[in-house]
Length: 202
Image 1 (spheres, rainbow, N blue to C red):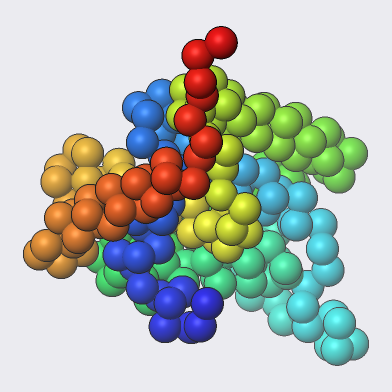
Image 2: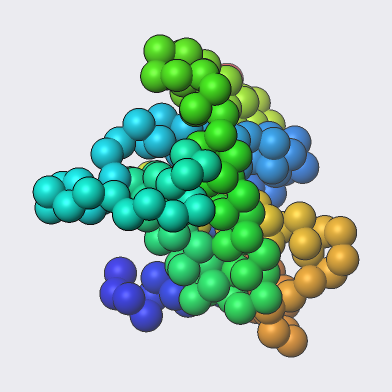
């Protein structure tokens, strides 16, 4: 998939939506996707500042004086934020603010926990959140999650937020977006069902 395909919001969101149709599965992802992102940032707080890789002392500023390091966690949050704004200016800006809030919150939590407890927090969060999503797919959706890694690790937080905005206030990035997505989801589901062997009665 080329760069243009990656930023085709309607196509990407329809593909995600085809795997998340059952209300309980949607709820599971709403509850657990952002905490997964947050827990990664907690762990990444302990990576060295990027400038130190070039043997440059970290600059002293307001951020560093409060323990907010410009390390891998910061640049991961920044990458996510920029990606979301590129996908949709309005919802993406809100998602970008959430990414920034997660970075600040995870940094402050990591400072309090220290590496030993932060690692345990990360591991427990990952187990709980992935288990919840697996139950959503296996028990309720009855369809395995997509093996698209970009969907699983990059797009999912934004799509969860977009789904919440659609449900609560009928938001759509542009007129006709929801209609277009619905049509693509139905087409993808039909294609999947045509490839799935029907269960014959015993």
